[in-house]
Length: 110
Image 1: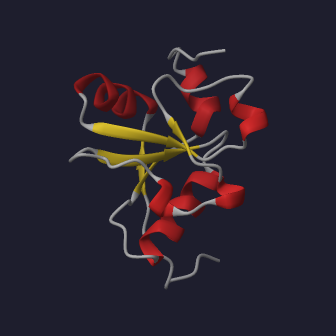
Image 2 (image 1 turned 180 degrees about the vertical axis):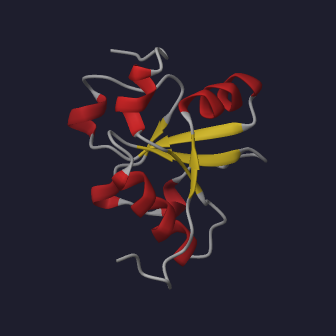
């Protein structure tokens, strides 16, 4: 059962995130571990691993919407909730994570 106290997290589709990155309106934060991101990365994403997650380490979004991403969409929800609990307005994540990103045919870096 979901915790009614937990901050709400908005699901964004791979297409929405890809468009936001192209338009420069979103900042993608990959919360996967370095051993994962060394194998395959989202283009232009900042890496802030969940294992040592501190929302203060997120680069200044400079007016862009912060969007969290991971492999499947679970850790990105956690990161958003942690950030919101610490007072940051970061309420969006890439639903389905890297799996959905690749299924949508979007590019990755290796």
